[in-house]
Length: 280
Image (tube, rainbow, N blue to C red; front, side, top):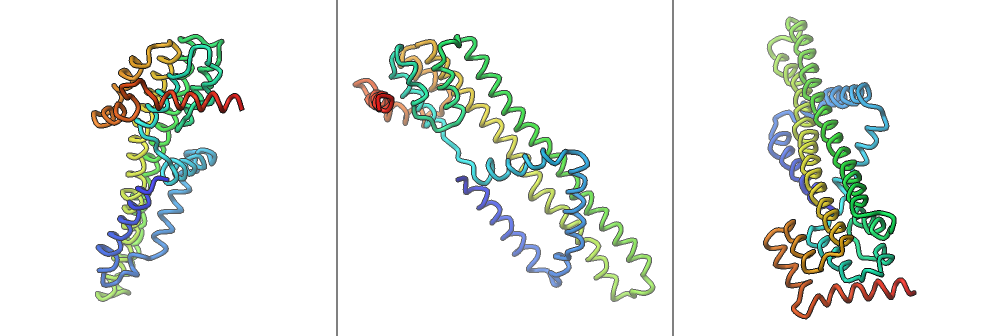
């Protein structure tokens, strides 16, 4: 599970409460529910006007599974899985689906690798198209979040404008003492609009763009590694080409853990486990 978003949300709420709401002489004015209801309800209504409910539901699933519950396999873990598959011999292609895999796309790639009907060019084309689909999905989610992020601050300004109009129209009735409180309640809607825009939608859209880039890079690593295995390149050659996707620290770690001088004992052991699993 990815704990970073939970910690980030906690830090934002803690800072917002202790630096904005709690020090306020009248914190109940900032927590005025009508302003929050206008911003949230208006944003939801405009979202349904632009996007079908199914897309908003998918966006909610993205927030749950890609932000809160996402497990991020490291590049070095994927590289180790690929190197373990190189220990299989050319007549053991049917064992590829049993190879260790820490990413669903790698699991799919192993299944395609075991298909004798797919040539190297066919395999590359399939992997590229499936990678492009996920890239398009992430890009669409980021665009949706950027679009939805425009509404809360605009609705906050709308609520404040309406509140100021009401305040000015009742100026003679409110008197000088009531002007400050009425203006504070009017601006509370703007407060909630800014909170939702710049503390939720905008960061989440930027996070989606970063996730898109990282996911595309990871899928490229998997695609290149699987194509090299399909081509029956030498394991040492595959390792060096995979190293091009890794940082210096990851390359050194990979060589120390998976490439001992007596020829990849870990990869051979993993291949033997695959053979025993298939035999069972």
